[in-house]
Length: 219
Image 1 (spheres, rainbow, N blue to C red):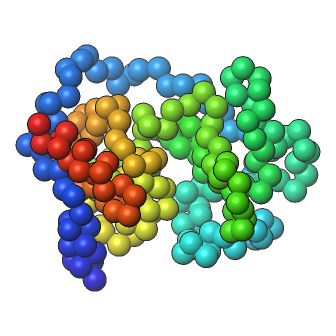
Image 2 (image 1 turned 120 degrees about the horizontal axis):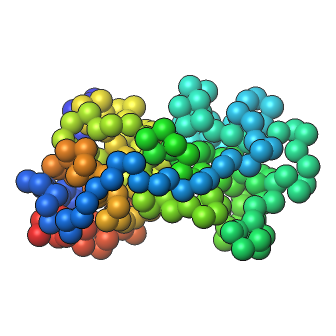
C-alpha cells in the first residue's frame, strides 16, 4: 500500500531539518546563467522501432507512458556513425551513443544536461553511462518539478525517482545522480521551502554516505 511504501522509505536514514540555514549564505539569483547544453541532433523519441532499448526499459518496469515522462530518446535509424560520437569540450572522443538511450535533464524548463545509458543487459564495459559534456548533473535534480510538500525523498537514479513518485503521491522524490547530495542541490531544496529530507539510497553500498549526509543535515 501507499502508506507501507512511505513507512519503508522512512525506515532509511532520515535527516530532519528545521531549516536549511546551515548552508553558507550567499546571494541567490533565480536568473543565474544556465549552461549551454544541446541534445545530439540524430536523436528521436523512443518507439517500438528501438527494440533493444524498449525491451530493456520494460524489463526495468517502465511503461510506454513512463518512457514519455522521461522523454527517452534514441538514435534514429538513419543516423550516421559520426552522428553517434560524443566529444568532450576539448574535442576528445569520450564515447558513442550507439546501443544507448538518452534521457534529457531540465532545470526550470531549460536543458542542463543529458544522460545516456547502455541498454544491453550483458554489457560488461566500464562506461555504462555518458553524461552531456560540459554539464554537471550534481547541480540539479530529476524530475524538474516543484516539491509537493516541505518534505522530499532523495534517491540515486532517475528510475528510482520515477518508481517512488508513482507509489508515493504525498511527497516528491528526486534523483540526485549518485550517492551524495551537493551544496547546489541543497540550495535548490532550500529555495523551494524544503524543511525535511528522507534519504533512500541503497544501503548495500551507500550506508556510510547516508549516515554522513544525515549528520551534515543535523548540524
